[in-house]
Image (tube, rainbow, N blue to C red; front, side, top):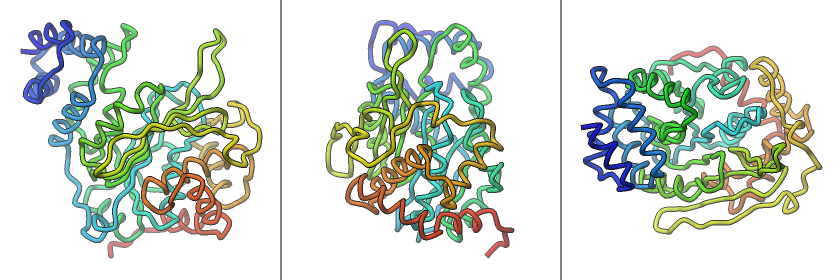
Amino acid sequence: MLSELTVFATRGDQLSRDQVASAVRALIDETVSVADKADFLEALARKGETPGEISAFAAELRAKAVGLAVPEPVRKAGLLDVVGTGGDRAGTLNLSTAAALVAAAAGVYVAKHGNRAITSQCGSADVLQALGVPTECEPEESSARLRARGFTFLFAPRYHPAFRTIAPARALCAERGRRTIFNFLGPLLNPARPTFQLLGVPSPEWCEPLALALQRLGVRRGLVVCGRAGNWEDGEPRYLDELSTLGETRVASFQTGSGVALSSLRPADFTFQPATLSDLAGGDSAQNAQQIRRILTGQERGPQRDAVLLNAGAALFAAGRASSIHEGCLLAQGVIARGDAGRKLDELTAPWTQP
């Protein structure tokens, strides 16, 4: 069946929902060869994955994930995830993670879905662990932490055991120099099924397709962003899977009952200090944790703080706590200035007693 679907994708035809379901069953089947899986994933990527295919793959894989019971008060209030796909090769500080912590300090329920570093020195799980925030809780404890403290981290490998059988095919594709649909699927597979989402992608042409995919998956309000960060040495544009304080950010936004709207933000629209990509550079988990703590406690006021404020402002806008990204930035600034962000970090790292 997977070979037939490879031929189908090679012809440039879009996979139906039933065909996606068949493909997922084959991809997680240990009796199917790694080469056949890689050939299919490459054919799909060469064709170009449509929003319908991306959302169908995400729905199939979410149905196979370990579930998380979201407390009713949390579900009623709304739940946020702030995440990037990775792959921008920029080596910046963990801006999405820092922005998620600021949003939680502003009173938004946050379920951060993530993993250890794959394409960078320090992933979201690495930096949170270095900060002292638990990263590998059982689902029951994660649910309780979400209700009691307003933030929980969902370690992707714990919730997606099926990915172990797909990993060798992804590795083979990487050896061949090919990306796959799984470069984009991770941020769509949060087992808490967030109400709101801020998603960063490493190339602007993916903003609209991923926004459409999120909308199909039931996210009520979302932003998909890609920020310009200068040029590579060969003169090609360089991008971040974040909102950028260094150049224009492409934004695809939506809410329930409306289509996807495309817009752009420029650093000149805000009062950020001049900066370069090197100003946003991160290091290992200990270095990044120290810097995030300095930002959240108001000790750091440089370009990295500006980048956190911008991304936190967008997160607060996505969660409906601000009427614009600019207003969200001001709200985030106040959360840090009043000490709320530092206190939230202290709360999240304090000893846990089951309520």
